[in-house]
Image (cartoon, rainbow over all chains, first blue to last red; front, side):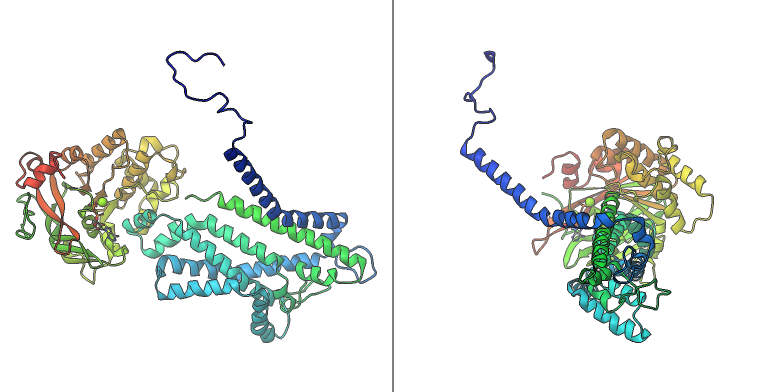
Length: 297
Length: 276
Ligand SMILES: Nc1ncnc2c1ncn2[C@@H]1O[C@H](COP(=O)(O)OP(=O)(O)O)[C@@H](O)[C@H]1O
Ligand SMILES: [Mg+2]
């Protein structure tokens, strides 16, 4: 440091601005920062260890055969579980086909038409309750309504159970999405002579689409991992299901069945299935993030 | 210091000798719930002229403006007393469909609010909902030319309307309003968020538009009012019996009279900046 010119005044004590000098304030700040990082690490630990475990145990058996072959009988080596992969995709698809239209239209009613009236408050309350319902109850509901009616376990019953779980997620995110569209835009649409219906379906809903897509993918991620509601709706099937109206295998139920089986090959298949479920959920979550970043407001 | 509205609440400062009247405002009071925002306004809007609403914030200019295309219907609790007629039709007749009213009386808002769609779609949407059957490309071009935006955007019609600058967005909103070919255009402080150059462009535009449209513009800018308006209405707010402030029309006259020889002291104070 050279002498400051006469015209610069300074009342900074020597070393006051230097790093490495520890005042009590700085020490406290550093300790707290360290504490925060420690908490973050603890929070991430479960996720990291789950991913580590499924990769460590599942990667060894990860092969194309897993996607193309059927589960072998006990004591036979090799095989895969294409039936369960198809089953998970199918039940989730059915769940989405039911929950997305209902969920989005419910959100549209609540936000755009009901605007906090008695009915929309009631629907809002029901949504909250529904999102807290244990998933096994959703399974019981589908069992009572679909399985007993059709007289068989089926992909349809599994899809209905998943739809019940997905609906509150779809409704909530769609509501958030619709609420995020500025009031100005609604006024503009109505101000040029659009009906409420035209304004909602041509302007507001498209603008909220990234949000809604995020909600749908989050709901799918949730549904893909659900086991309890599928146990007595979709049940399980050693083979490919030949239609929507017969029992069908899913990844989560396969994991449940094989993880507790005494046969080593089945246990290994359960680990691979777990790996695939985790990857599936990870991929869907990343997709959800990508969709959210495309929002216009 | 000024007029006491309770002694002359019904002063028909609105009677203008000249030209056809498109909108008549007869003894209109507007409420939000039990709060009276605007009291006893009489005001006639002449055809193909520009009328400016001036006055301090909160005196009900926007509130009154929104009544002319029934946009207040969107606000829960908003209520209109008195009579507003458009070409002789009572706008608040239960038989009147507000959607039809808004097709004839367009609106440009304070904050530019293009739809989150392409520039082209921003204009086409309004035309489509109004059942326009003609050549859409031609309409889009004509409207954008009308709002002096065409040259700036003709190569990027597919881009989002939100990608434009603030001034361009506001002119896009004007283009969108004129595309539905309304008879009246309401503008609520259309330049308040714009830089001086964009403001001048919009003002030029207003001059051109009045050949074809009747325009009511709310502005806080005295120069703007004197530049663009043929008539000016001065509103003020005053504390009522319950202590809550209501807005009322103080004076309505040719713009040069309002600015050079106003009849009310409060108008004089306001236009000369001695207000408060
Ligand atoms: N949506 C609303 N709900 C309740 N009160 C409102 C609403 N909009 C405006 N007001 C009230 O009405 C009065 C007039 O407001 P406004 O018309 O916006 O005035 P201006 O446009 O002249 O500034 C104000 O006191 C304001 O608080
Ligand atoms: Mg205003």
